[in-house]
Amino acid sequence: MTDSHIKISVCIPAYKHPEYLLRALTSLATQQCSSWEVVITDDSPDDSVYQVVQQFRHQLPIQYFKNTPAHGMPANWNTCYDKARGAYIKILHDDDWLAHPQALEKMAAALDNNPDCDFVYTAFSNHYLESGSIEEMRCHPFYQRLLSKSPINLFQRNFIGPPSVIMHRNKPAYRYDVKTRWVVDIDFYMQVLEANPRFVYIDEVLVNVGISGEQITRDCFRVREVEIPENFYLLRKHSVKALNNIYVYDFFWRMLRNLEIRHVSDLRASGLEGDIPIPVLQMLTLQRQFPLRLLRIGPLSKMLMSFAYLFRKRL
Image (tube, rainbow, N blue to C red; front, top):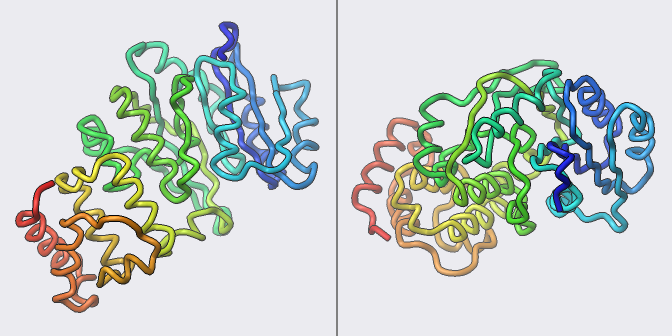
C-alpha cells in the first residue's frame, strides 16, 4: 500500500557486509531529496546490519525489518518491496551506492516528467574493489533502440545493468521471480517492460556499483548447472518464439558454444527438463561438425550462426 506523502522508497535488501551498507547509507545521507523513505530488510544471521542502521537513525527516514528466518535472494528483495510505501521504488543493493547528491531527485524527475513511463535507468560506474579500478558504463543508442523494439532483446546482453541502476513505479505486479538467480534482473526488466514498454534512460553516472569476488556472478558464470536451466526457463517464460529473433538466437548459439554443450545429453546433465526447441537441436547438430577451437574464432562462429539462423525452423 503506497502512502501519498512518500514519493520514493529506497529499498535495501541487506545481507551481512556492514562496511558496504555503511557506504550506501552515507551516500543516501547526502541526497537532496524530500518525501522519501529507506526500507531495509535484513537477512543477516547477526546484528551487524542493525548496528550500522542505528548510526543513521537521526539522519535518514529508515524503516528496518529483521527477517527471521532469512528469506534468501531474491525473496528478500520482494520482502523489501512489500514494505515500500512510496510511489516510486529505487532498489539499492548494499554493496552499491549513489554517485550524486541529486541521484534520487533526477531519477524521480524522469518518472514525474513521463507519466506514461514506469521504468528509468541510468549510466553507472563499476568499482572493482580488489583492483581499485573504475569503469563507466553507458547504454549505447543502439542498445536503447533494441530495448525500445522489444525487451526480449535483453537476451543479447544485459545492457541496462544491475538492479541498483533502476527506478520504477511501485506496482504490486513488479516483483522478482524467486525461481531465478542468475537471470533474476533480466527477467524483472522484461516483466516490467512487457507490461509497459516505455522507459527513460539517463546518460549520467548516478550510481556506483561495487564489484567484489563474493558476488553471485562468480558462483554462476559459465556454470552449466546454473546457466542452462535458468536461461531456458527465461526463454519459455517469455516465449520460445523469441528464438525467431536473431539476437536471442545468437545468445543461445554462444551459450552452447561457451559452455561446451555438444549433445542433448549435455543439456540433460546440466539440469534441463522438458522439450528442447527445434532451433536449439539444429544448433547442436551444426556445432558438432566443428571442433570447439574453431567455434571460438569469432568471425567463423558468427558466420556459422548466421547460416544456422537463416535455415532454422521458425517457431
